[in-house]
Length: 191
Image (cartoon, rainbow, N blue to C red; front, side, top):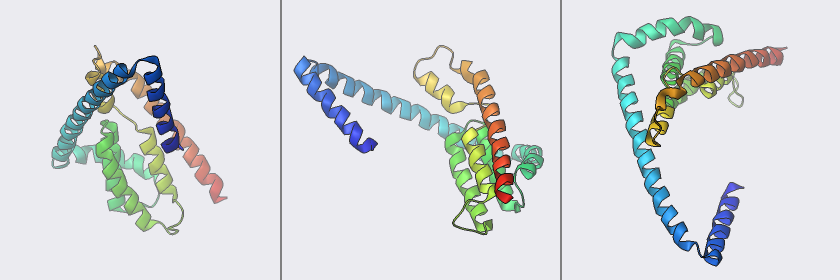
């Protein structure tokens, strides 16, 4: 539907600009927005590369092992019957999300989902563990919201880290509510 609406809006805007004498403003805004998009993309790419590199270095140290030990009891309570590889992938995904590395967390989440699918008895439906992983990823519990900070910084915010406290509140609330409703849904469907 959007692939129909957007071209219509663009054509209407161009026609309106021609009749109102603002075609020069459209040309100017096209080039300004293109430059802004490229700058934003480079900023986000740099941030993603930085944090992905930090995660790679951290994975070779004791930091990830320590965080894994802290998260393992929580993961065991949220997920049932995980094998070691699934558990490890889920923990790495959660750690990447906690550090605000949404782009780095995506491949880790896909690996975890593939492992969960291997354990899934019915390949046509999501397992309980798969649903919980989707909920945790969607809630995206974050301590350091690096993507938002990078966006705010690239757009000229005077205090790009001001968003940290509201992000903590919103992601913690989203995670708690998501986990509760997922557990309720899982129990209701088992009856």
